[in-house]
Amino acid sequence: MLGDLIYEGETRIVHSRVLDTKENKIEHTITSEGKFKDVDTTFLGTFWTVSVDDDVVYGEGQHIITTKNGGETATFTGYGIGRSKGQHGSSFRGSNFYKASSDGKLAFLNNTIGIFETEVDESGNGIVKIWEWK
Picture 1 (cartoon, rainbow, N blue to C red):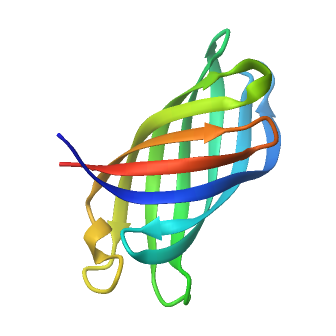
Picture 2: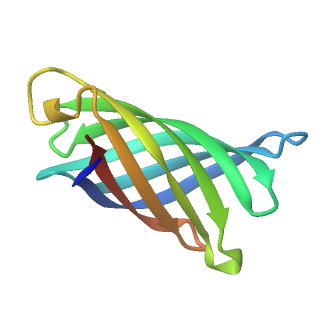
């Protein structure tokens, strides 16, 4: 069951590089700033995508979340499907699997599954929303 919204933030693709031309495999580095519940955070991540259809890509990534004061971190691995919106950017949907320490502000993320949607414009800027999957 889809639960509460646990994250909303702005994201930006800061770097891309080709990993494999045979598979059209591309690696992207992103940064994001927003709130996990009421905790101000940033995260840095790297994900790769491969083409699976004309306007569809499959992707996997790894990310590190840091509280704004730098005192805590958590991690997640994500899997998703992206669809091109032509010259207007792309749209991604998928799931994230979180790990965090058992205490602190990000402890609620430990062993949580999140369902995300990301809308990215043609310049690589976007909005991320993540809901807890209960």
